[in-house]
Image (cartoon, rainbow, N blue to C red; front, side, top):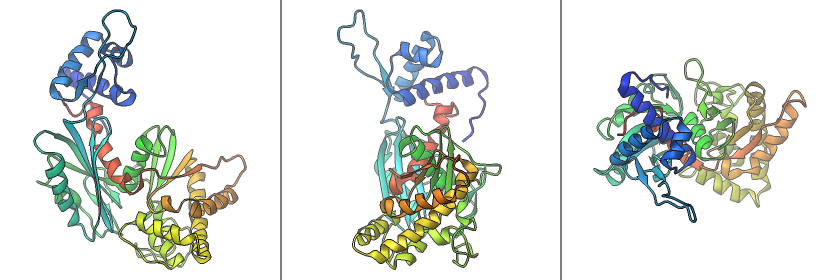
Length: 387
């Protein structure tokens, strides 16, 4: 989400307030004097801003904790967790997910449900709003993550071959169900954003996230921000010609990477059925692999094809860390081990640094969590006024 320039006195006030909010989110509770140092604002200005934000319920004052200090201790303030929230949803092929997130980045509620069809999205959203928003909370933004290309209007699905929808459908489905406007974003981008701010890529300057569901997508994060490309379509890696050249893909072609390493390809390789969610499916596959050499061999083949694609992406993007999400995470070394060996063999030069491969720490909720985190963007950029 790109910040819009502020104009005039009102715009300056919002920008100053957002600087205080960013400092509190980034570094935690702080006194007014500390906030003045962190933001470069005058102490008097910070005092007025904090007063306005406190009155609005965006920040709360805490007890001073300075044992033995002389003089009157400054009272720290912290982001308030009860008044303002954002909503993040994911609509995927076989499940829907929801996250309610407070200003401090703490999930108020997380829910994942098996689903067959897009009609499950408004049903879940209505239940979440009824149970976890109510009259005592204000929704500052809502984002829906989908496995497909989303145009730069943050609303229109341009191409989603596994979901079989296009246009503004996901946003329109939530009209009147959730308060305010609804944005739509790519699921891999949202999950990558979540891992960079909450999960396995926290503190990493350059990371690459790979979804592990029926489709395979990528999110690229540099210094905490998503790299979206010229048209906003960066990361559509599942349809690279990598892996088996004869494997049929959901897009109608053959030889796509996700046709070799997506969830259905993995299940075909091990001869096991799909369960209610990708993660639950992978957990059962991993348990079976402990005593079944044929399952382990099938996973090794998937891991090799996974390593081929990662080697290609690493040569182009040079990430420090590659986070493997979705079904990859429960399988762990069963696929990551072969992927690492293939990656080592395929990098063109010993000078190239192999990225660290890490399983997701957020699991299947990553995209919905990232969608909710992105929905907070206008608050911390100064576009959305809380006071």
